[in-house]
Length: 124
Image (tube, rainbow, N blue to C red; front, side, top):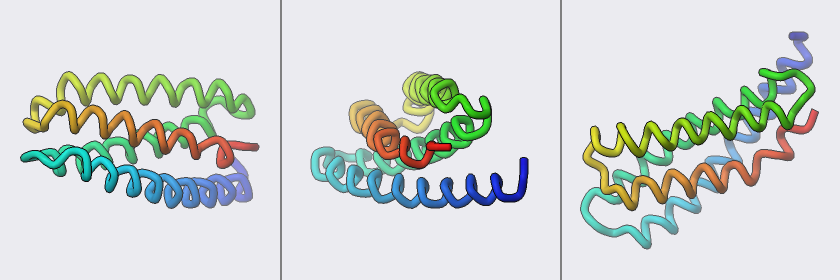
């Protein structure tokens, strides 16, 4: 990969991370107003961290894994998100004793809103 391409990707990743953090933060505040029970705020925070990690990994995959075929890269990223959701639902939520509704709805919300803002950053 050339130095220019690396800088472009790093710049896009930084901007995407900032935009994703803002959208996830706003969503997290709204979710915290809805889910007010014991442990639910913790579930929202953990879901946010998991979603951010998954989104950044999916973004890098979409930018690099398949070269110029952004749609194929985006598809791989979608697959990664589904795997993360499944592992989170069947392993992490129980292992951390998180409230299921708050944990799963917040993860899905974070993944959804940060996926919506992703396309402009994936353009070649």
